[in-house]
Amino acid sequence: MSQLPRDRANTAVREFLASRDWSSQTPARRRILAAFLRLATTQGYNSVTMRTLGRELGMKAPSLYSSFPQGRDEIVAESLRWFTHTFARDLLNCAERADSPQEYWAELVRFHLAQQLQRPEADLWDLLVATDRVARFLNDDVRAEVELWVDLHAAMYAAAAEEMGYCFPSQGARVVFTLLDGAARWTDWSGSEEELDGLLDNAVRLTRSVLEVFQPETIA
Image 1 (tube, rainbow, N blue to C red):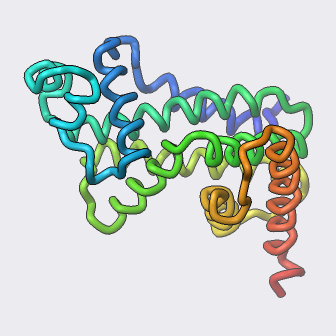
Image 2: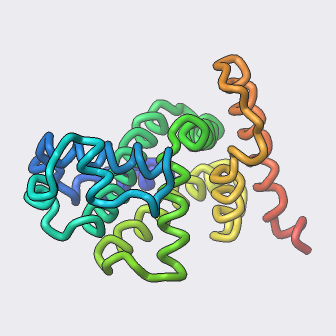
C-alpha cells in the first residue's frame, strides 16, 4: 500500500530532524542561545553583542567563548538552527494528529500562526533569513539547512493540497508563508486566548482560499 502524500511529507521532516544530533548541546550553550533570542527579540538583533549577552547571563567573555569559540556569528547560526529544529519538531507533532488532509492543512496553519503571534523569535528567524538573502552572512551549511527546512515545510502544505485535489505550485506556498509570517501586522491580536482561537480559524479559511486562486481554471 502506497503512502499518502502527507505521510511522505511527515517522513521527510522526521528524517530532517534525525539528521541533526542535539544530544551534545550543553545546558550552558542552551542558556546562551535562549538569552540571545530573548535579547534580540526585545532589544533588537543588532544591539546584542558578546558584552551585552555576558551581562544578561552574568558570565564573563571567556565563558561565552568556551561554549561558542567563534563568538556572536556562531551564536546567531546556532540560534537559527535551534529555532528551526524546535519549530519543525513541534509542527510535526501537531500535523501527525490529523486524520484527514483538511485537518492536516488546518494544523499546519494554526501552528504557524500561533508561533508567529506567541513567539517573538519567529519574527527574528524571518528577519535573519531575509537578511541573509541580501547580505549572505550565514555560512553555507546553515543556509542549506534553513533552505531545506523551508522546502520541507512547503511540501507539507503541497501534500495536503494534493490529497484535497488541488494544484498547489511553489508560488502558492510562498503566498501562504508570507501571509502567516506577517500575522502580527494584520491580526491586531489583543493577547486573549479566545480571540486567538478565532484568528486561527480565520487563518485556516483565508489560506484555503489561496488554494482556489492557483487552480488552472482560475488562473486561466
